[in-house]
Length: 177
Image (cartoon, rainbow, N blue to C red; front, side):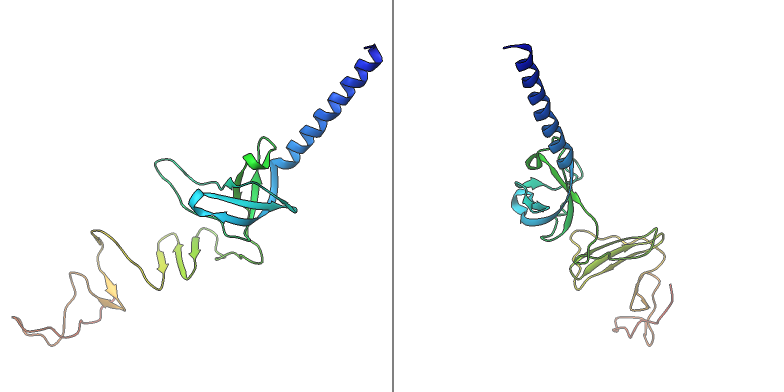
């Protein structure tokens, strides 16, 4: 092969390398939407600008502390593929959308919503709202008082219209904690 032929081969090789590198860069970060979810496998398939990915995992903590926080079909996500191969990538949360809007609007606070249940953390309070709450195991409450519907039910609560002894007690006396 003459020098001109080797030069043409080298140019073709470099052009192929440029195309490969462009594809890698273009696929490193892709905005996408979750198309299908495979929860038992911990995988999802996403669509990025009309191209469907293979099944790929979503990013979760997976050491001594493990999270389970699967994405939702239709959710906006980021598909990251450091190698440029989307089938070898990871799914990251991608932000709010008109379909899935932000659940809270206060800085310095955190709120998590799952269906009809919400959990709000502020600097001095945690508020859990849910149609039903189940606590399993021994429960210990430490603090100066415990209230239920504005009534002190803690160790310092008192009842009205009660005579000492084996009699049943009356209603608790309302008390602010």
